[in-house]
Length: 181
Image (cartoon, rainbow, N blue to C red; front, side, top):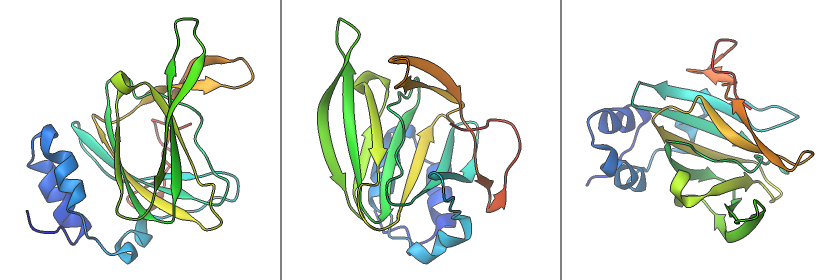
């Protein structure tokens, strides 16, 4: 497979591929970081979720991370999720729920530019965090689009369902439905 060199080419490949091929397509992504900057937004308080493209089958979201930003521990329900590291480094920590209902860490992975990771409900739960000194950007492809997910609430030590939101849609501020965690 030839290297994918633009966001438009990536969308075209994803639009015309079987779900089982999407990981291979993302592995062949060689899009310049500058192409993603039109979709990037930064918030002083938390990471941002910037929707680049969405269909009924999948969505492509650019997450922008400052030092110290992290997701809560969360699941992916019926979605398959690929995370492609574009810039900086993140740590992915995976968990499984024990019979007693407690969470146990099962794996810890350092993501650097060009790395691809995959997550779905059968694999348990995970969180991502930017525990490095520089900002980071990751490209997430969800099959199918993620509208809500289980999020672990540290204060109650229980999972709750949270509706998702975008910070931007196609590079513009977003205030519509499907608000994210």
